[in-house]
Image (tube, rainbow over all chains, first blue to last red; front, side):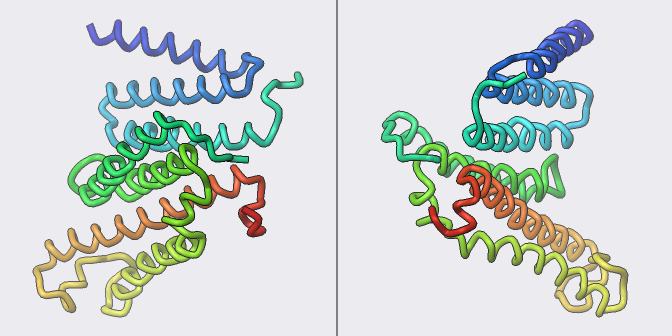
Amino acid sequence: MIWITELLILTILLICAVGAIHVKDLLSSAILLGAYSFLMCILWAEMGAVDVAFTEAAVGAGISTAFFIGAIYQTTRRTKD
Amino acid sequence: MIRLYDDLIIQTVCRIMIPFIQLFALYVITHGHYSPGGGFQGGCILGASFILMVIAYDIKWMKKRFSEYTNIFMIAFGVFIYAFVGLICIILGAEYLNYGILHKVLPADPVKVRALATLGIEISVGITVMAVMVSIFLNLATFGKHERGEV
């Protein structure tokens, strides 16, 4: 049964990754990257790499989202291209 | 950039949550050699608690508790502990960061000394990572004004 869960997480991960590239709003893009990071963390933990999952949750989903939001506040929220 | 939003719900929740986040970060740092986690992850969580403080309150409010001088001092202090433990191992006649040799100066057997010195390394890495994360966020969020002393 575990492969169904894995396939579900991978599908949502792919949607998040493609959405983060294509969305016009930069704040939504940062939040989608945070969601991508968190799903990646679940995937690492499910594969047995608990230490990597911990790092991904602390750095990817926690710190880097805060850094992205701090950087977006210095620019415009909409992308030009 | 970050102004003082007087949002009661966010500020109260953050005031309750921040001590528990910091306690969990200290747990992750001190149990780094038994369980998943370690200096880097614990330092990131500890830095995230200070970043949460900046987001919920104000930079000035946070600087009263964790000043810029302390921040820069902690960046250098963690690196200093790391290099100091490594250099003591060289002076005692082993390789860099070979902690087992420290049983010559500490009153314990080599296995316990190795675990203890690993804890010291984890703590130093945690201090440096925490201070660097807070420093990066402050410089990023204030558009360089923090570096020039205008905030």
